[in-house]
Image (tube, rainbow, N blue to C red; front, side, top):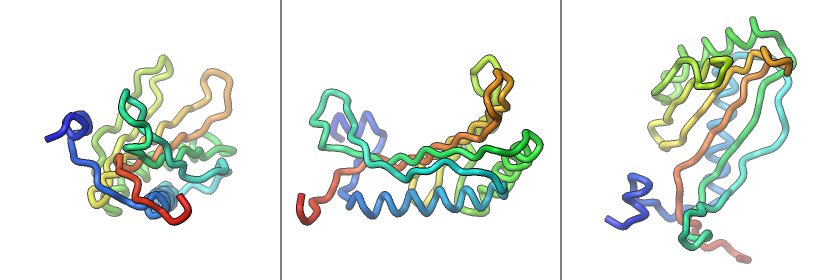
Length: 153
């Protein structure tokens, strides 16, 4: 087992970055469906990022999609978090943590792993107790992979 696979806990596979971006976008969309919240959604899509830990930064990448639901009250956001906790397993996710985070506000946080892809989900309900607008912040991340050579690269 290589040092990298020991660091990650798995051997990163060769994958086309475009396919990984599409996979993460589809998972994010499914998570939005599971939340069952009609709210405003931040713009932007999945981003391919290099792993930078003292090795060749182009050797390993992952795809991250950060987005938020906002523009509705805490009652709606709370129902969204409850829906995530209840229905993510029906969509192939295993909830590994559901409880308060370590912030002073003790925001509810759900961490889950998509079993087919090993993608990671973090959903954090920030109630706006600090004067900011209430929202649920999402992060959907792929496993690290070795980028496949693509045409034009």
